[in-house]
Amino acid sequence: MLKCDFGNLRREIELLDRATSSVLHWDVMDGHFVPNLSYGALLIERVRPLTRALFDAHLMISDPARYLDDYIRAGCEIITFHIEAVPEPVELLRRIRQAGCLAGLAVNPKTPVSAVRSAVGECDNVLIMSVEPGFGGQAFIPGAIEKVAEARAMFGPEVLISIDGGIGPKTISEPAKAGVDLFVAGSSVFDLPDYGQAIQSMAALARSARNVS
Ligand code: ZN
Image (tube, rainbow, N blue to C red):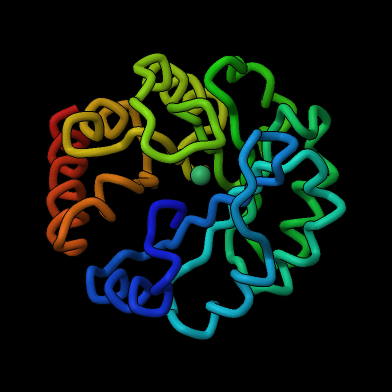
């Protein structure tokens, strides 16, 4: 949602509903873990009643444990924090699961997948960052593809593998082949006039890449 028109958020959410976007991914930045500041639980809570889409809170913040309850209360179904912020993640992952949410762990481009090994069996979503977190509109880092395959091998078939950053028609096929389930797309949806067409054409590319692999 980082790339949406915040002057018209209700309309954007309606358009995404019509475009059959199943998950809304909220990039939360604290100006500390990442240089930028975006929005927080209050905004997410206010727009929660506008759609039935799943809400995925991607917490790019230094102290997710402190603010976790706010995102649970806001109605997020998936809550993902960074291994770089919480190097011992198990306790926080368990708190998220105990609240009935899917627990996610994100890995920055420079962090090896081995850093999240302690989360095997404790986590529902592994988010591989394919750009440095903190800004929308960056170019896809190809090294992420290998990390997707590594994460899949480490966590097994039950865990969701997500990828975030620089995803568009030209970059979606390789990570799809490597086993990504959930693709976070910003500019490649919001920069086009028809969100539905943007989402459906990327989904078709991902499906066909996955089927031939
Ligand atoms: Zn994100």
